[in-house]
Length: 249
Image (tube, rainbow, N blue to C red):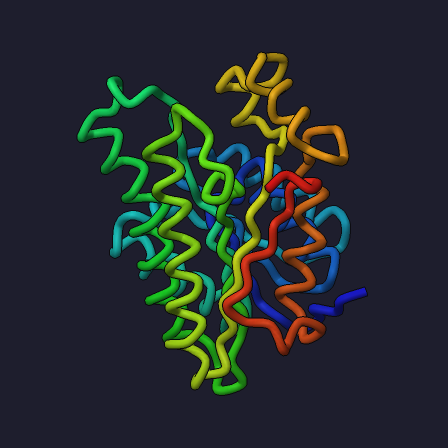
């Protein structure tokens, strides 16, 4: 099992869904975890409580990753609490599916500000806190950038950008021994997909039909991959995009 004892991790957007699953997985492997959230304090506190209840270390820190001031405070709080940084998981992300004719300027900027600018701002600030030993940045993309589903033009564009940024930063940060990889999940059952009406819909049936393993994913399917990428076991991997969609591609 990948050992993260003594490491410090920040997971953005970790109050629910994939982010919460990753935060709990990293903590179970021994990392001290900062559970970042934008609006759901209750959700973040629940994740922290689960981690602490299982014997781990975690704190919740509010911050909108699309705002530079919030990002600076997030990493300052991380250092104040745990002394440094070894792992950043850029998980915070939003989406709204709509046909081309329904796309608006506001929705374009809303999704790009969180999914793309937020990832860049968080990595930019995190770079200052990694030790000379380096660390691991794990981006959360999507198989959408590969399969290009209809009615997702803005969201899929943001995830295509995440793929590109992963490649660029893997080269740019390599001299500092900071590895940058991306996990690109397929359909995952989360609070968000329930709220969006995906679960139980025709869209869910279509996703499952395109998934060779024949089911929706769960956050627990993604977390072990993040633990691996956070650990020294993946020390020779950077710039990789790992498809985690039960064979969907």
